[in-house]
Length: 338
Image 1 (cartoon, rainbow, N blue to C red):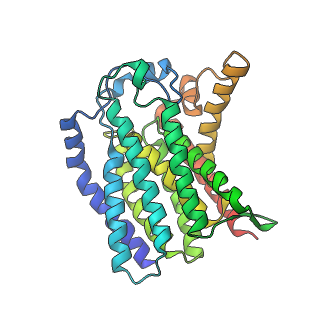
Image 2: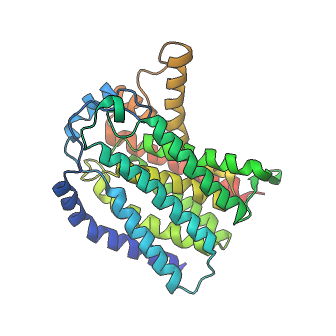
C-alpha cells in the first residue's frame, strides 16, 4: 500500500509541475479550440454546444499528450525499480492501448488545425467512420493479445461464477474497448466531467487489482490516478486545458482494458455507469433520427440535455461525480460478492 500511495503522489507531483509550462507550450503551438462550426463524434453538427460553449474559444487542448508521456515513463520506471511481480504481456497491453489510441487521437487533434475541407476530412478532425474503423482494428489487436498471451477467455457473472467465452471473448472485449473509448470521448464535453469520473472508476479498479494481488495493474492504475488528479486541478471549471482526442481516446480505451484485465466484466458496466449513460443517450438519439425520423431528446449526450434544461455546468459535473461514485460502489459490490 505504501508503494501504491508513493507512486500516486510522485505521479501527481511530476504532472503538476510540468502542466504549467506544458499549457504555455500548447499556446505557442496554437493547439487550442478554434472558432468554427463543430460536430460531435458522429459527424453531426452541434449548434447548442457552439452557442453555450463559445466562451471557451482559445482554451488549449492536448493535455492527454502530457499524461501519456508521464504515466508511460513513470510506470516503466516503477516496474523496473520496485520489487514486484510483473506480467510482461499485461504491461505491454496496457501501454500499447494507452499509446496507440493516443496516437489516433493526436492525429485527429492535428487535423482540427489544418483547415482541410469538410467533405474530405470532416469539419472537426477525422470523419467518425474512419476513426471508428481504426478503433476496431486496434481493439481486435488488443483483445487478441489478452486472449492468446494472457489466457483471458472468461467473464465473471455474480451468482454463476466464471463463464468461458472461448474465441468469442475477442469480439466481446473489442466491443467493450470501442464502447468505452467513445463513451469517454462523448463525456469529455464539460470541464472536469470525464477526468473526475475516470478518477472514481480508477479508484474502484485499484481496489480490485489490490485484492487480486495484480501488481502490474496496481502500479499502472496508481500512476494514472496520480497524474489525473494533477490534471483535474487545471481542468475543472473554468478549464485552463482540455484532454483533446489524444487524451479522451487513450484514457477511454485504457479504462476498458484495465476493467477487462480484472476479469470483472459485469462490474465494468456499473463502475463506468455514467459513461454508459452518456454513450447510450447519444446512440438513442442517432437511432431515433434514423428509424423514427425525429429526435427523442432535444440535444445529446445527456450532459448537454441537462445544460439545455438550465443546469449550470459545475452543477452537472459535480452531480455526475456523485452518481459515478454510487455506480463505483455498486460495481465493487458486484465484483466482490460471490
